[in-house]
Image (cartoon, helix red, strand yellow):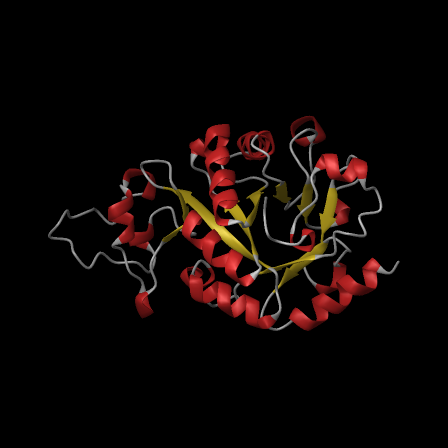
Length: 263
């Protein structure tokens, strides 16, 4: 049983049926890094503390997998090509284009970015988030194993062990739309709420049974099922369910969610 209040959870389809008004699910504020900030800041313990200090209750965390299919908090599938270096190449020199899916966890763990940032496991990050009362939105990249229900069952177990909350996210067209929908179906099958980051019109023959919610424009989402909730991209289109925020608009997003909740 999670110690987090329901305020920090995306509602599941069953909860939406049971609680159609959703008064007990006030908005999720998902902190995303500033445009020019490196991704390794967002995907770090320091990023969690920064978001918490600003007043957000969730972070937009990026997801890749190690060779053992352990969930990692990193944007880059090939971290040695982006910001990271190996301080101990004499142990085992890895080519710069080595993806995390070909790295054992100890190899991932020794990588460093400027400022001493490292790649954390999602399980470790969830434990840290729980201590702050925060959730992690875990944005699955295009590793095919994210279409495996067992991977998401392990992620949910990590959250349960940490007494934390995680919800899954993925970009609409990453790796092809059918593969993106398969990732979301795997999330839902494992009991992890699935959130689509939509970037265009949605084909419901593909997505109809794959989602709990989406974050994006209503213009691209006409005719969606009643159980699918919408989160805004910022203060301008925030809903009572929530929106994204960044360093410059946290207070505006919080106020916008509060206004939407009173309607």
